[in-house]
Structures are given as structure tokens and as C-alpha cells.
Image 1 (cartoon, rainbow, N blue to C red):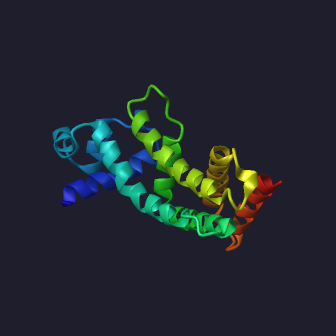
Image 2 (image 1 turned 135 degrees about the vertical axis):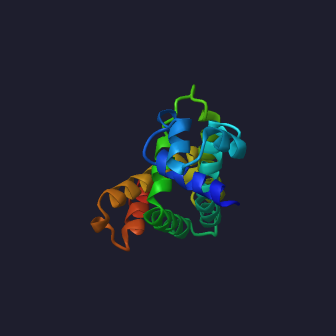
Image 3 (image 1 turned 60 degrees about the vertical axis):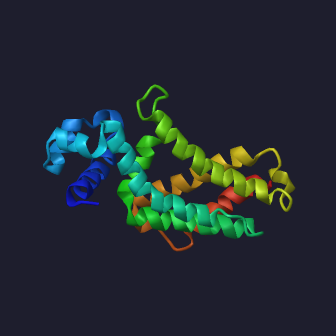
Length: 189
């Protein structure tokens, strides 16, 4: 990847972590990267193409980690603890990607980038739905609740990350465990 493209991706992450897609203009992107709009279009084709490149570039490492930790290993609590820790560690080190994802979580169905973002969320939730579905033989109470459990788990971890990023002094090494324990209490009751 050439320096111009890398610079554009970095500036894109910065901009999309501070404002939703609709509020970031092509001229804003080009100006912040010190390039012309034709240069941006040359590398990415369109604003949507640029957004997709930024989003994919920065979220792929996170998604790869989650795909590994969400693979069921006959110990659901361990899987969830490992996943919560991985997510917290990742986003404590890369707050901008978390903020971009949070803006992407609330896209309008009419937004130009909605289908792309929805595909990401479907894959993420799908990974956890598969985890919970695979755990049903050992945890029968999850039967029929795998989708809601997946969403609830993702929202629990997201809430924990918000708390940590808003006040890093509240983070303790056992916070992932506490989040998982709080979540597990709900699904096992």
C-alpha cells in the first residue's frame, strides 16, 4: 500500500471516529489528508468506497480476534471471558476504531453505507449466535435464545468499553470477568 493511500486511511479513521458517515464530506477527507478530491476518487472510487476501505482496514484485525475467541471450546464462560478481554484490550489500544464502529451501529436504513455496515454487524452477531447455538447441548436454557443472547452479550461488552474509554481509571484486570459474570447471571437464570 502506498503512502498516500495509508495517509488517507489514517485520516479517514480519524474523521469517521469523530462524526457519522453523513457528516464527513469528501472535501473534508481530501483536505485533512492534503490531497485533492480526484486523488481520493482515484484510490477509492467514491466516498462509499473510501469508507468501506477504512472500515474494513481497521475492523478486520478485531473481527479476526473475535472469530477465534468465539469458537466454542466446551467452556462457554471461558469463551466469553476470553472474548470480552480481547475486545476490551483491542479497543483500549485503538479507541478510534471503536468510536467509528459506534457511529456505524446507528446508521439509518436509508443511509448509503447501511447495507455495508449491516453486513459487518450481521457477521459479528452471527459469530456469537453460532457460539451460543453450539453451546446449547451443554446449556439447554439457551435453546431458542441464541440470537437475543448474542445481541445482549455484544451490548454488555460495548457498554463496558464505553465505561472504560470514558474513564480509564475505572478499568481493572477483572473487569472483563465482571461483565461476563453479569451477562451470565442473566442467561442462566
